[in-house]
Length: 397
Image (cartoon, rainbow, N blue to C red; front, side):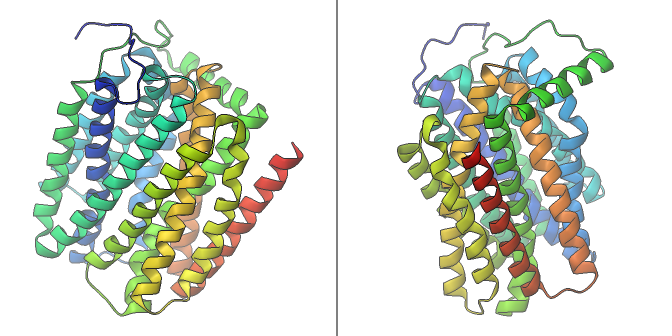
């Protein structure tokens, strides 16, 4: 397709539907690949503490490439950036299938994901406008969480049947995402003609960081989303170790079912946020953030599977309601200041730094032998206190 100006700003336009389809397939691959790779590591007798290290490799790619991916997203048609980065994910998943060290293959997927994220979120502000942006974010989050739901379960179930079959399904999903990206309109680059020399690129990125962290509203959004995603990824690995200890179940599928219940809740919460919260009423999401930590602490004490499912569903609802408005707020500020792609790249740096810190602390706790139930309670309490602190700071501001 030739470069064009996008005139259909409906959230149900063909371009938006192509973005949502591509995001679903890409996120499906990401989530199935995590559990398939964890099953491979379990099969190859990697130690428990190495599981979060796998995710730290993935997260490290986001941090390492953060100064560059925002400019890439804003310098080219974002749909084409999404296509190329999904291709890199495909190469990473295929390499694990072919016997390459899982940490190396997962690093390639992480590099692809780092480049993909600013483009997939940044394109929303180019395909739609105004208050539709919150609804578009709701669609994006619902698609993502539906992919987490189905992808996580597929990864665990297929891995219990055949690990290589699970890894192959991930590669096929990434291939499907590449095809879906071809149907996204080739929009004009948001900020063409920027310098590609190392120093100007890094200076531009850190200038964007400084601009967004100095702005009270964008700093509020960055802190909130960073805490949320750092907690979310840690909860995933907590479940993998919590299930055999608390429930006595040792298969690969049960942790994925529990993760899926969080995903179902996030879809519900994201839908509620799209209806009940606007850019002017973002603070309505804060009580949900506090509840996430409280319910995680209660969840860690459970020893039966049905209450566990119910509590994880509540955690998901609170999570969706909490994060969607904060994402929309940052995209709107970024669009009018440093560029949507740069804003998402700055957000990724914050979120992935939080993930790296939380995963490192979690891995250390497992390594030194702290009981997984104690880790869960402490994690929930600290998260709730952090959100309360952010809420009070935002209220004073």
